[in-house]
Image (cartoon, rainbow, N blue to C red; front, top):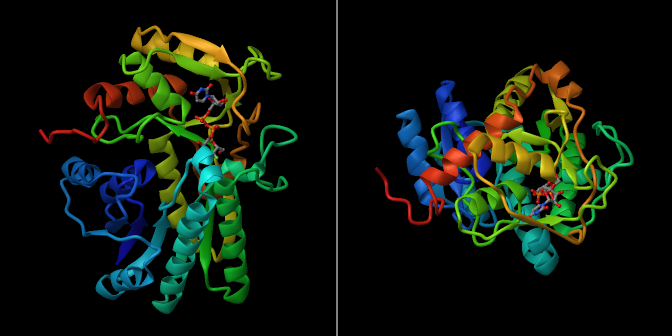
Length: 341
Ligand code: UFG
């Protein structure tokens, strides 16, 4: 029996693939390659020394999704596939709704058809909107402010309805805080297309000289230095949480949401300073107005994951900076012109 990884060529999916293979699981990977590269699949194989089936499949195509379940005995699905850029989702909402919602509906339909009812879903802390207080607990009210976030929240609700209709589904909804870092080998990591939206890839591109300076979006938040605070979590810790969730589903029916964060908040400038210290690189920056839609402070209360999954993040900010930097320096252009060594 195998675990199906959707979006397995992407940043988090590729790390999950390595973790699953290293823990003795068989996997099948699908990815539309619309926002990822085949090279990452080669690197997963290189890192683990294991072969696995890969299919270029877009979940919007239900026939193709169905075929995967015909060809392979799947026992559970880790569902990473989806579009994820907040700004872009405001420009092309229909594409986000079609890709994320239709893709997930198709996936659930073919899973039900083949009697595969164990699902680990990638959600996001974005479903908490602008939380009234921190740390954020899973029972907080859910609200979203952009189409990307709305797709995550809608899918959470769809999955709950699915479970109401058929209680044999076992679903873990994992709400990610801010995943950064990379595999310690420097062989897989985040490979953004064009100008990075997120803070860490932007910092590493400034550090390597591809961008002149970082723009710090706002210094008038109610935080110790005025810049926004987030809960940065190492991607390897994050994917270890997925394995724990998978094991939890073996023991428990139902739908359960979990925060995957460290419980610690760092500001934009905290991250910049830690990165500079670890890498001995100056990060020139300019403070500019707040980015539309950004919130001031968001970090997790990760107790539920600790108590029910037996998981907690282990890697600190320095390791996250070191590993992000190793990835950037060994792959200056991500996977784009990567030459296999
Ligand atoms: N920031 C900058 N300059 C940049 C990029 C970001 O100052 O060039 C700041 C932001 O204002 C924010 C912090 O760095 O204070 C982190 O920003 P990111 O874009 O890295 O992450 P966000 O918290 O804004 O968004 C992330 C994910 C979203 C998800 C959201 C909530 O990218 O997908 O967390 O979980 F919806």
